[in-house]
Image (cartoon, rainbow, N blue to C red; front, side, top):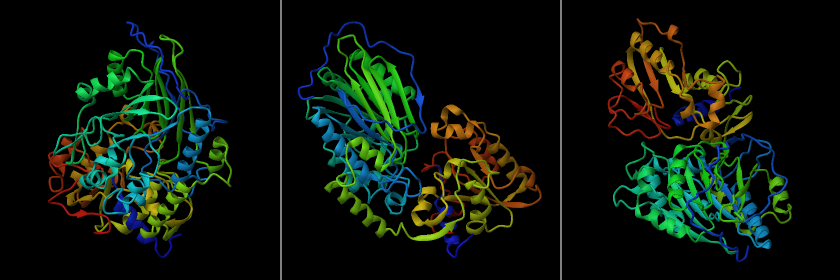
Length: 550
């Protein structure tokens, strides 16, 4: 099944691997009584794929959310029912805004972070995201926050700031706990106040989880510390005159930090309605924390358009009633929900965005066919499944594109392969979708077999802490479809008498067993003082292989 260019595909995939949003609406009555919003047992619902809503009902608060798009601006070419791209989402939101306005309602669009790392639109350029930030600026976001992927590389951060991307949002790019490492100032603003055209008033905050492995250009303050700063006092003063507080958080809907933030809000404003718009964990999730606080997360890779509408409390002590929906990126569905048709769905703005994206794809040759695949391959199926991408990778790609020693041993974390490879023509962009990162491999040469046995045994024996697994990956791991670590050989296949080249990806300085393996691989390991980008170890002693070089 290999075409004349399949070897090129193999080298591209191999070299890319690494770890891996009422006119005059009255403000709610406020009696700052001692009672706060009534606590509720958390209502957690996870929806990997739910039925599309028959209609979207507008209430006092109406929010559309995108999160973790990871540069999937062109949408999903290969998947039935997911034919919408970023321009289609833009048109959809524009029509929903117009429809809401006819009812005297405001509708707001939010983004909860992770705009880069996912496709060639972001990652086929020298600086990740450099060509797509002008596209994203065209989207009518009310406010955005940053994800962790914007912060892995100095040049990505510098592009966001120096290109005018952050400034473009006029104070609505919200990064309460992300600071410029040189000036100490927040990259964006910590909060903003939004006045809707139809009377809705919001205070919006933006937070990232406590990220440790960020680049040198930024510092990330623990959320608990950021909440003690003066800006939070100012935000809560503004919240006294707002209909609701919206918190953009690049963290899971059930992350303990959401409760930390809510507790601080409740300490000052015990009855203000609060809506968290979460991200990072790549799934559809919803939670209700108390009678006036809810949280929504809306998928990944432009596979979900989240919608939540809430009726504000009728009395000072009454509850906030919310309804949420997940809309598939399917153009007929979006037309039905927005009351449009093929004749009027496209707008002037969405047409321009579509042309801009097409131009970038052409410039980067992302649609160039470089191979073909006989079937679909998936990174989450078990290794004995014919459709296992990991089996394909270790049996076909690595030997042809990476191995030079007769006795190679490959060990990798299964988060390194991010998406499926589909039947039919394989285009350049498909390889970036499978693994978008530009991280490097680390190779230890001439290791004794006994040392390799011990190292592989330690790594493969690690148990998964399910509390740390992405929710979207949880089912795969919990049901044993794919282990968190894979090796190209079994321990029994390794001869103590032979020497081996050991190839590594996804090595992180916070992995608990690192101190166990370190003494076994002295020639290639690096100290914990060295920063890791996406888990790719950069060894000054060992040979390093980056994208396109051996």
